[in-house]
Image 1 (cartoon, rainbow, N blue to C red):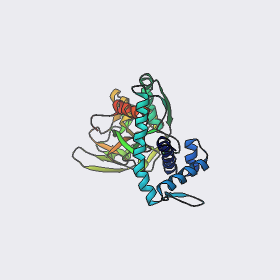
Image 2 (image 1 turned 60 degrees about the horizontal axis):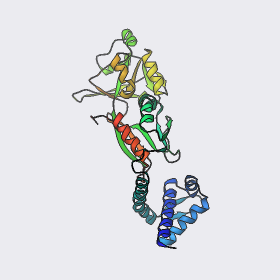
Image 3 (image 1 turned 90 degrees about the vertical axis):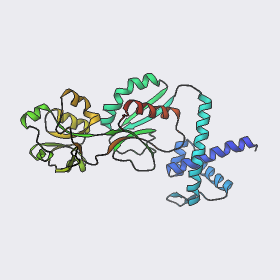
Image 4 (image 1 turned 90 degrees about the horizontal axis):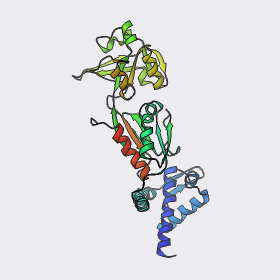
Amino acid sequence: MNDANSASMDTRLLTAFLQVVRSGSFTAAARELDQDPSSVSRSVAALEAEIGTRLFQRSTRRIALTDAGRRYADRVEPVLAELAQAREEAATGNAEPEGPLRLGASVAFGQACIVPLLPEIRARFPGIELDLSLTDSNSDLVAEQIDLAVRLAPEVRGDMVVTRLMPTRYHACASPDHLRRLPVPARPEGLTEHPCLCFDLPDYRATWRFRSPGGEEAQVTIQPAMTISSALALHAATRLGLGVALLPDWLIGDDLATGRLTDLWPDRLATATSFDTAAWLVYPSRSFLPRRTRVMIDFLKERLGRADQ
């Protein structure tokens, strides 16, 4: 075998090895690579023979990286990513990004923040075949083949690449109709006199926290008048005057600006979890990002990012 063919074969072996690392099994890796599991297994065995060490511990139920396998994966993944990126840049030059891109987000964030951008996305990137996956479940990016996702949380943990898209802030708010019946309390502790509408997560239906400009914090125990599992439905119920809710700025910015909703204490920070919350861009690994994913990351930062982050 000549040197060129040898280098080409090595790349295929490395690709198979890294896909097994990401997928956690030969079967899952074969599915991702559109190969037979036996072919993937042979590729990994050939790579082990070539470098002279075992990369996986195998049993009838599972496989696991050896220490040598983990070190090897950490070293070769960025190298393979650089080769793939160089190949794409050489092949495409200044061509427009194209190909399928699966973008994930929660239902409410997708509806409020991403759907309004779809006409611009289509106009700027006509070659990108966008698959917008909106779900409130905590999706497994690798298993569900999601290229890029937006996660809402104080922080995002796990073996993923995370970059902050924008800070988020929550507001205790109510409609003018509600406040005509029950005026705004002087302090957050007065919420005990108001029906509270709560998002169906433990933190949101138990205690709401408030922080004054001077740093004074108050914790208010909430007795939900109504618990709703959908952020969009919770938003709608608040606008209908059914009570006070804790809602994020990205969902109610227009309502606060037009007076459809009122922030009960605009000078105070409010939260059910942490005062430092954000929307994060998340993607599965540091290996090669196709140009279509990179331009989408830059676009979302441009259109949704904020100067105060």
